[in-house]
Image (cartoon, helix red, strand yellow):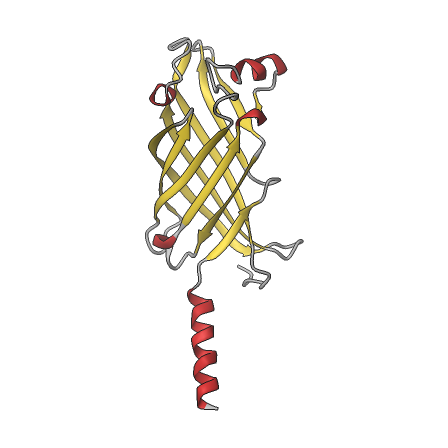
Length: 196
């Protein structure tokens, strides 16, 4: 009996210590960017096609991990002709580089805080560069309607497209690109988490 109790205690500890893995919810995740258009406005675009997951435990943010793969062909600039232009060799060159990849390197989220920084590597046009995103941890709770366990974040950063070899029409089309992410992830495990 004592041996069985020890095994149960060890199993329970393993479950508690396991970092939850979440799959990106494609309906409630948005990957958007803005770039200056001749100084008149900040032209907006979005990628609708992506897949990925992240691991997160608010008690151990240092163990966080994530990976996102974006389908370049899913770009949406609110204009069909401009979409096709952006897929050409002078821009995203989708024929040779169909995916944009992001991989986390670390999450700095101080204890008791909901604001931190996410460090990672962004790969565009086959070139990888380090990026740091200002991250807001929004909520970790059971979804009111679906009963799924969901984690939500917002994040922003700014990159230079020239760092990735995309130099077409600089400075008329800005070099600085503002990136904004709204992310919801659904926990893979079927266990229902606490409602918060």
